[in-house]
Length: 150
Image 1 (spheres, rainbow, N blue to C red):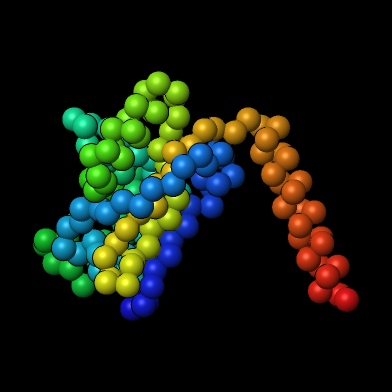
Image 2 (image 1 turned 180 degrees about the horizontal axis):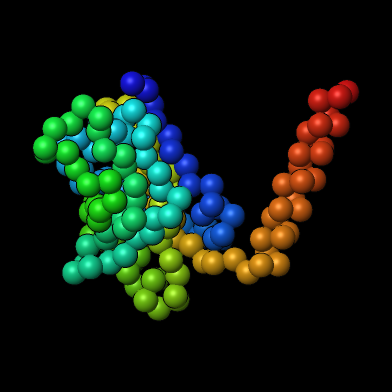
């Protein structure tokens, strides 16, 4: 079992421009936290959506726990996110008014062993923005190689 778990959504940083970040708790079933602590989760295809003034992470994949029995969880299901009422209202206003998206950026465990989800209020990038970010990555990689050589 891993001490600290950091599962990143690298695709979100490529596809979206992150405006603001929030840290939210997740409501999990019994065996889900065991799978997360083993590092068997994926958030690349997930997104967040409001339902009855509550925020849910949809399409988040947490692998079934191998030692679980008939009470094992579903791999893909909606998971409720826990935020302050003030944060929820500001997120809902910005999503409705400005047409922004809420995307999970990182799934991690804190020092107490609780699973947390870092979500970001994002705006989608255009294709030319994506090409620009790829160009920046390439130049940074080349500069690092040159620095390492000297």
